[in-house]
Picture 1 (spheres, rainbow, N blue to C red):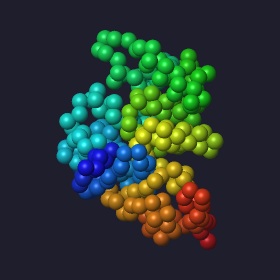
Picture 2: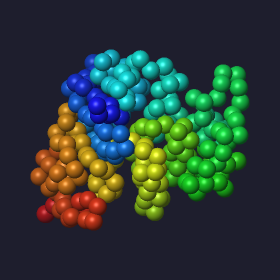
Picture 3: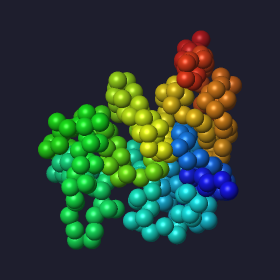
Length: 260
């Protein structure tokens, strides 16, 4: 008997403020797989991630590791899935260390305090993300790229087996983009982490994803390997973009071409 997939989405419909956002999405992500969801603005990428993470009600449509998401208590769900949102709410005056420690909340007893193991897990993640020198800094004093790494650190400190990344590199320079994604990929291979991400940078998306899903107007327009999805025809059709697709070592490289 084969193991249950990490994520199983069946006929997912989401309507927000009477506007249909997702219209019958099917998606299966195997344990240990990296799937990146792409698509033009307004396609429903972030909404899909929120539904998979349990932040939007989707009764009967989403299962994580074989368990319907609505049957998971919030604390249990937090041990399974961690989300890095595009713009997380940052409590005023909070230090980097205290913010990343929030990732350990599912393991701390009610009215209890963090353990030595919790602190060790947090400091290990901070070191791997080059954030050790920021532990006493207030989050509000950091640059956008530094904050983005702190948001990822909190998710990684959570120790979840499924990581949902909503535009995880949008505020990072190219060097830190590679560092963050290389780290996520290393953790995925070492620890069997499953990754579902949304990304705008199509070349970077194709470098790291095992599979890609192209959303357009709330539906799956294409799915497959990066080479199957990142084609000049599909990108012209759904992004209205003029590009050249060059085959790279790990996936297609997308080069915008100026229109005449």
